[in-house]
Length: 437
Image (cartoon, rainbow, N blue to C red; front, side, top):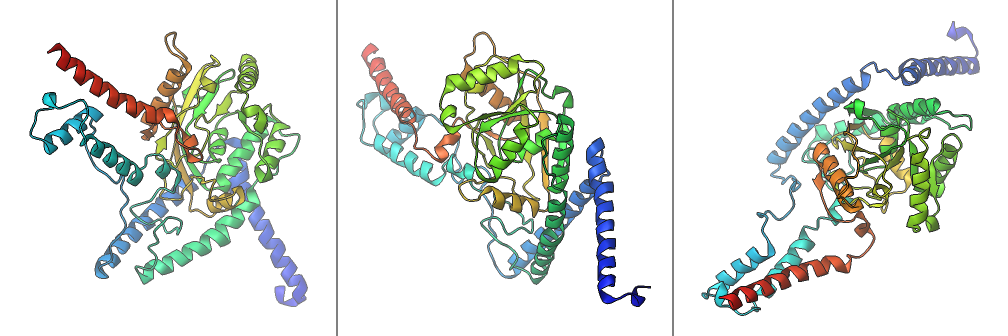
């Protein structure tokens, strides 16, 4: 029949049939499941298939490296410098013992050899900085066929190179167009239920595979949901399973367009850059929101910046001063399928979203922790640290005291003074002990 039609009509008909098939597939496998919140298990099957491919690629990579006598990169999972945790006083005692035959009690308050402790500590800090390495992509011991880490493996083996090329075609010629087709267009009449459907469509557009744990602890109205922060898509991950009011600074560009569209359908709390610095104004607006039990729970990322999926850094105390019930949430991504960390100093939002949509998948686990309230003997900082520790423990993340703001700022003098106080306390303590004897 097609041969009897003019060539132009044949092309039009084939195009129409292709679009019809594509729309039917989108409707059946993406839009309808997103509306009813169900899954056919296709993404989990896809994830298991990728894991098998990655396992084969890892074995092939190691075999090829062995044949070519090529040293594979193995990241230091626990840091570059391996040593047992010790105190300042213990380390200085050890230096004094190794440098002098005199007993420590017979030494003066200060020894020249003490300088070596601080020199060594400074060099160790430079080599194995706990802060800086939290803002670069997490390296993998095996290769996930994505050339997005600091080390590429596709040149080790011809088979790996061919498989990597096929992966590029699949991600950019199939997954990327599919993601662009199903991304929702926000409208003014969006209700919270339509919001939920749109977030679920976004989850499918990003090929996100999410496992939610302990849903009975999901945040409720009049509360504050706090979570560790790896990526802007953290919002999509959480909002596809519940309703939230967002809090954040007003942005420009693509992010600003999204924010303006969102606030038309839901009472989100956006602050101008000048308002963010006014702690009293921020606290007032947040308090007014949580006191209205008809309003959605506020979603806050207290770290204030994205961390690379390995750690939880200091929580800002502002959201813990309000007195509302806090609902902690731990989010942990599986880096085997794609790096979800947003290095904002390296990639813009559009570039980052492109990287996400061309990853194999976004696989993560979400844990809803039991609600927590501030105790009578706790200040806001102690409460924030207690919530942070619970999130880190549940997500298998490193609990750090450092402020994520050090990503762009200098170390505060208080951190330096703390080490000076520890050393002074040790010297004064030794002097007092000798005086008593």
